[in-house]
Image (tube, rainbow, N blue to C red; front, side, top):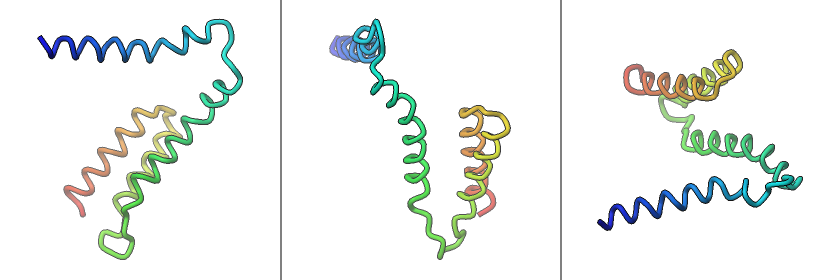
Length: 103
């Protein structure tokens, strides 16, 4: 019974968080919120890239080569297909194949 209550509360809070901006800004979205919506996604992606590449040691084999190849593939597929999901999935698969089978 406790699990059902916990799941219900988490579901309600998640739904409330998702719909709250639409309820608060019914008439017009403030310029500051629009600005944040425009600049935060690229900033978050940049931070994720830095986080993923921060532990690369270029003085130890494999010298960051799998990461460089996978990141290059992500950039290439993104420029080609313009689909973030396909780009990230491609980079992840290529990185895992390189780390598990090649390096």
